[in-house]
Image (cartoon, helix red, strand yellow):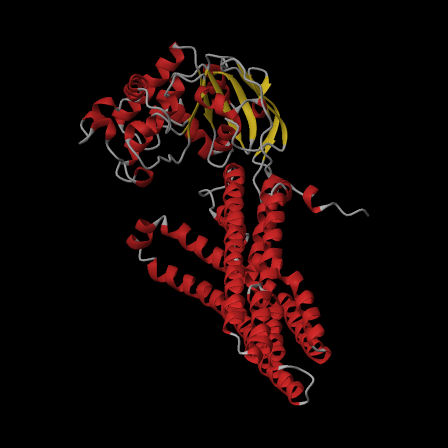
Length: 575
């Protein structure tokens, strides 16, 4: 089977390949820097073999000035190399950060919980690795055989000694890679799972404290943390052993090279200057290999980050250019839609089909776990379907430009999530604040007078996730956000779950207004008032649409049909 070239393997690989010119420049500057690294060796040879022999101060001055100029060129080439790589890494981040953001965002759709930050950490690992010492070691490694060749030129036995140490260091690097990659990945995975689990539990800190669950949580965390620390200790022990062996080999090389050179000087086969120069060259030749041994953990982390990021971008490709369309009227159609969740074999929705014309108010009823919330997410295009199609104005909802479609959709989830910032910013969907539209939406949701009583009115900061507001206030601000800008399709999932009588009245007033404007409204509810405003009622049971039609006809038929007591009670409350 023909192997796919690296630069064609994935989107991430192609992005890296676009920086080949920068890496070529860095390689050229590395060539110059390593060539100039020979200057100290040549200077020593001149000092020991020419200056000391001739006792010439002028020769010493000339050699020193030339060497100083070479050192300045060396420093400049290394600075330019680092600058090229840093600029390339920043451009790489700008090029991929938006894609990583959208890929992470798409990965979280259909999952419970906030967007994970791991992909951004992976991108940062790759960016930092591309400007770190490991990359410089890779650029310097090809010079190892050149330095060894120069040592052979000084004396064959010193060349054989340097070659032997190079092979030992390379074997140690290969062994280190084999021994450290898997443990390092296990540690990162265990640490991530432990922290994620703890953060998830701490979101419900009030429940933990009020019911005395903190001690139980601590014992659970202690077990996970201890297991993570054990894996970390094993991994660190392996790295420490490798570093110890590497240090032993490095010190042995320095001493044995100097001893071997001294023996050759005693035998008259080598000059003192060549002895010192060979020792310096040998240390320089083995330095890149020694650096590679010390950075294997960075290699392992970067490789894992690259593979995770590569998979993320492959699983969630960027949206192709979607042509602009006219604003939707709100006609929505589901054709044989089935939808499920990862890790669940039985689908949540099963072959659901219906068509709702624009301007219709629909009440969605059904017992808990029947798939009502999933249906709401499917209709606004944030839950993947395994079969069927969701059409908005006859066009699959996936074929709409999400940025253009968003203002024409309104969605209030069952668990209302607000964002840090002001009340006005939340109602205006974190975009440009149109004061008239914000006040209009707040008035429709019955929150205008309440907001004006806050210390700074609409500019009042609500805290992280709106934690400075009550549950009912959060729900009504979420309702105002859903109807902001007069959208064509509004989906409200249990919009009155936290509302008092005044809030319920405001919700019904908002639904009446939307109905009068000819908007399509879906209300997932069990309360009588919202059902009374509906033109049409849908009943879901076990993910199947068991009833759909005009409100009165569906409710009458549901009462006549034999059904479990719990479901009957829910419909009685609705009626």
